[in-house]
Amino acid sequence: MKTEISFILNGSEVKVTVDGHLRLIDVLRNTMSLTGTKEGCGEGECGACTVIVDGRAINSCLYPALEIEGKSVITIEGLLMPEHKLSKIQQAFVDHGAVQCGFCTPGMIMSAKALLDSNPNPSDKEIREALQGNLCRCTGYVQIVEAVKRVARQLKGKQ
Amino acid sequence: MRRFDYFRPKSLKEALQQKKTIAGSKFISGGTDILVQIKNRELQPPALISLRSIPELATIEINGGARIGALATISDIIQHPELGHNYPVLKEAGKRLGSVQIRNVATIGGNLCNCSPSADMALPLLVLEAKVRLQSAKASREILLEEFFKGPGESCLFSDEVLTDILLDPPRQKAKAIFLKKGRVKMDLAIASLAVLLEMEGGKCRKVRIAAGSVAPIPLRLSKVETLLEGAAISKDLVSKAQQLAREIVSPITDVRATEEYRRQIVGVYVKRGLEKILG
Image (tube, rainbow over all chains, first blue to last red; front, side):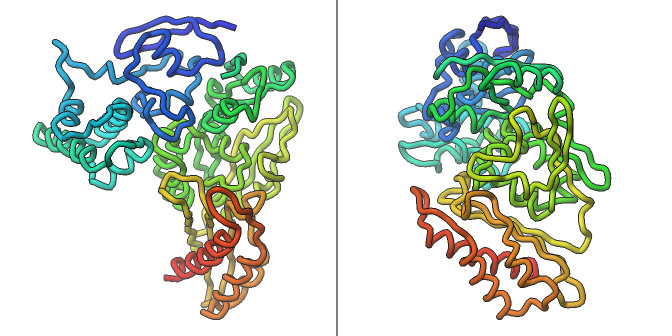
């Protein structure tokens, strides 16, 4: 059974027709061709599929596509600045060597963004708690936490 | 994933009607458990009936006590200032459930209806002696949460019923409660967990409620330990007895996450630690 829904994707309204059993990640990757969002475990453990829905980080592998109707989604593609410049968070990940194979990175960055949008000045503990649902299997979390801290410092400098 | 239909009724009445009409259909709230079960082919329902478009199911009301809609997310509960103030143990347990991404969609009603022995939200609600409201097309009933759980994945819900609300009595001013959870990492399912509520009066235990997770087929009230403690002055010796009794009356299993013996050990230690922390 197919249903047409509309929602806001990275700031623009889109309409898609989806089957009931599809998940948000299926619509993002297959229908919208936004393959920046990754599927790791498909069970809500690894966080590679993290996107932001109405300001909250969620696992798009556990989100029924039909529930996105009328809501606003931000994916990693939505962070790109004009002229293909990286956003502050993305640049900080590059500068701090917080990316190795890169598979966890889009989810990690979306969790970091959701945190910084609601709490621009997080403690180390708050950063680690916000990223608890995002697994990195390459190297570790020190550089990732450092990258998020740098963005927080930049935000603080602005205030 | 196996195909299924997905319905989003706008009212409880419509939802209950659809559930009745489509044989084998299941309700979905946050979906963080049921979608994993479908992916792993433990469940293959022909249709899911979403409760997420029924606004009144997601509200939280403070009215002396509290009424928490079954569809309130764990994040809604953690961030609700009055709920957190009146029932801090509920907030503590919520903060230990899953990751941020899970807490943002998982619901308190879903956590209960999944009927996992490790359900994090069940323990604070058991020690707070919460009631749940179960609604069918014809009738509504309120039961103690303690009577709700029947076994792993099994509750006393009839197939035409849905859990709509969680009801809490006004907080007992002199009581203190605590939630303890053992996982390998913080966002794990509990290897063992415990909630304790303790109210002292004149150096004696006036009221105590203890509930343990992942050590029995259901989230379990440790009534025998409660009986041992109630009315008594809580000495070191009595705490040791309570610790020993807790180890004996639980019935944990050995699985990939821990052994039976280890779970018994933890639940005993947690009874001791819980009481000591509240007594200060």
